[in-house]
Length: 62
Image (tube, rainbow, N blue to C red; front, side, top):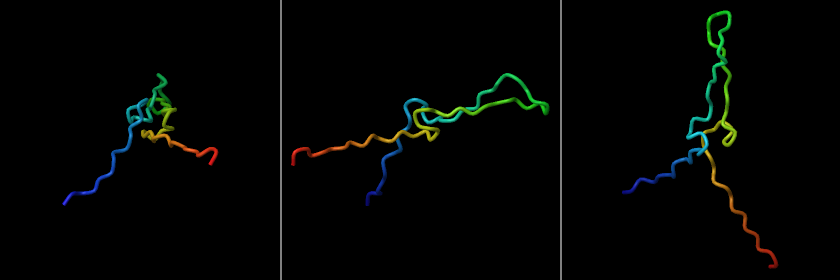
């Protein structure tokens, strides 16, 4: 018997699934830890997945 399976989620082509990264600012704080900021992929808003566009069909004139 075949097992039902779903399609794998579409990975964002801009970030290849690595949607959030930590960027070091090049300095250290008073405790000695590096100062970092987090940047998110603007295309997928930090999810790592890209959803297919919906195709909207209209029946004009019917």
